[in-house]
Amino acid sequence: MKYIIKGLKNLVKIKKQLTQKQGILLSRMLGNYFFAFLKISENVPLPLEFQIEPSAVCNLRCQACSFKDSKKTDNSFLSKENFIKLIGEMAFIKTINFTGIGESLLNKNLSGLIKIAKNKKIQTLLITNGQLLNKKTVEDLLKSGLDKISISVESGKVDYYEKIRMGAKFEILKNNIILLEKAIKKNNSNLQVIINAMLLPETLKDISHLVKLIDLASLCKVNLITMQFPHNIHDFGIQNYFGKDKEKLRKTFNILKHYGEEKKIAVNFPSVNYKKGQCYYPWIYPQITSSGELLPAV
Ligand code: SF4
Image 1 (spheres, rainbow, N blue to C red):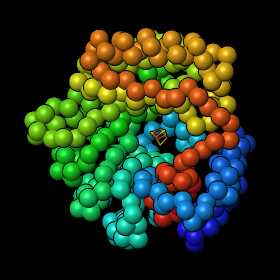
Image 2: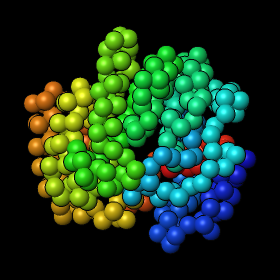
Image 3: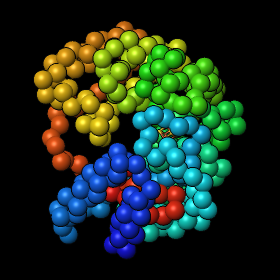
């Protein structure tokens, strides 16, 4: 409970530093929190999966990221000591998703944190923008026992990717994924690589973004792509896909599914059903920031 109150106070504090749009987003998040809070009863089991943030700073400034101006502080990186303390208090935890409002690979202790989790038999997933993967980081990740790595890429079109992921280079991304897949093969590792695409208005309007994404996966020998909608669909102006344009969306998904099959790549799509005000994240997928606050969700 004390972590929930601390997290809530933190949200209210950062609200003052936000733009109007970010403030609205945060208010929605608080709304979800309140909604979830009312429904918590003693019978609701504790979450099995947590998002834990190794780094609160990032090497990129993506257009779709609401916290692109986060600054480095003493608490920007989760330390090994705090991580051990955290998971020591959460014996019920089964999966850790290393992610947050920052790039996890910037935390020099990342592979150490993963090793600690693996020693406790916890499943681990790392979400990364992929730009900082190199020989050394890949080697460390393979040694850590990481189970899955999800690389965020919204489009296979170079110009668009570099425009929305400010600071990223498509060529670097491509070479890094190839390097990763080669290392996995060479080391006979079970690490699963996933390309994850957040669906944006432009990529839904012009299917070639996602067709080229499948081409990228094929070139890099990644055999799974997952797609998801942004949580705040109204801010991205894609709410019509859950109403009058639902059929169009289904057709798009169908074309991509078949193209993926041709290339021997599984493409997982999100549900096209959406009900306003529903958010299950606080119950099953809360987040702990690098400084130790518990948030209902990102
Ligand atoms: S890489 Fe992730 S955390 Fe960094 S700016 Fe982009 S969306 Fe935000």
